[in-house]
Length: 446
Image 1: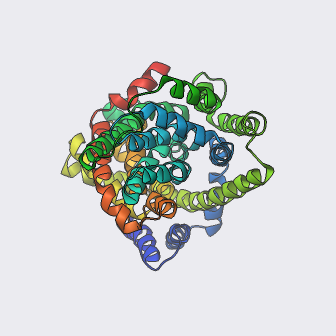
Image 2 (image 1 turned 90 degrees about the horizontal axis):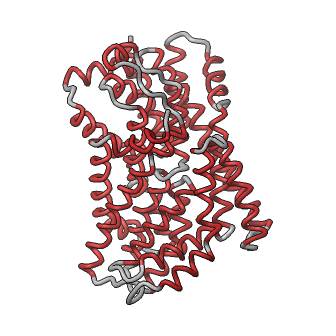
Image 3 (image 1 turned 90 degrees about the vertical axis):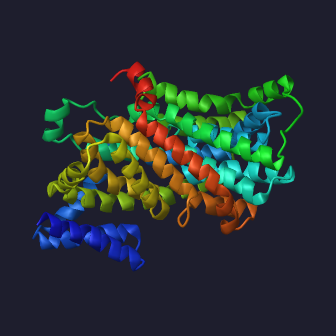
């Protein structure tokens, strides 16, 4: 029965996708077919879907989206870019490096890959073109760096992974083999993403340096200018304080991730209206519209993906998949290699949040059986899927960068391959050395 139901769920899902149905319809349609075959009451499907959005941590999703939109409208992102440019100084390919730094900074207040690409790209792509960088290369650097927005905390995909993982307990078989596992929490996932995010950024900076040296892309200036650096830091002090306020409040226990998102909203409004004095009422309305559209789309996917995942768990399909995989190999490195390749493939065709909600119920029980820490698993999943923003055919960041810089998608894709390969190398390092992810959470405590 399990094999038959697996065929119905995944087969129905893939058939509907191929026919052009939205991912929400594909998930819900496959789940409904399984419910009817199992002779379950279809009303239960609606009840599970409704309950899935009742989680308090999920309130952080629209709040972080709104906070990111308001921070962009408040001039915070532009000041972060100025700081990154002055820090890059005379370094070969300095504007490319500044783009990576700017995406790191903005990722700490955005939590979204495309939003980070758009905010930084609007400023950096024209600046690079003006300094004789190829438009396609400038767009490729920005698109590849935009994926950092979902690794550096706070991150919307990390919130979604945390919610999905918290509903999955370690199988009894895994506990008997490896003992009790550490609990999953969104604050722990947030702090675990810091070092992996820096590793991923380092791979991009080194790749940009190597390519820029070959192509003769010079630095912004002959030497670093302390007055310019000090000026940009003073001008952007309120922008720099934003991630410290958000993350510091979470890790110090002053407020939860959900509450921190609300604090970030009020902070953005205060800075925009009273300090920078750049925020206008029409921009607030535009930010609200953007938040409503993004949040509504995510929640619809969450409705359907929760039911899909619940069916997988009830029928013990992940356990059977784990048993099948472990009968082939129990080598952790090989399992990680296969998992990363699978996630890279999924990221090419599926939206990140949907991929997380579908893959977690299957992947996490397998990793529990191998004794992997769920926090480490979550960060590897997020880092791998972040590459999907820069890989066609979906490649959302490529389309955003193309719209800003004017280079075609094909031209950007031809220049982005070195950055993708470097990012994949970074993911393997993060996967094979768990302490890179788990060291900071161990300092903060359980």
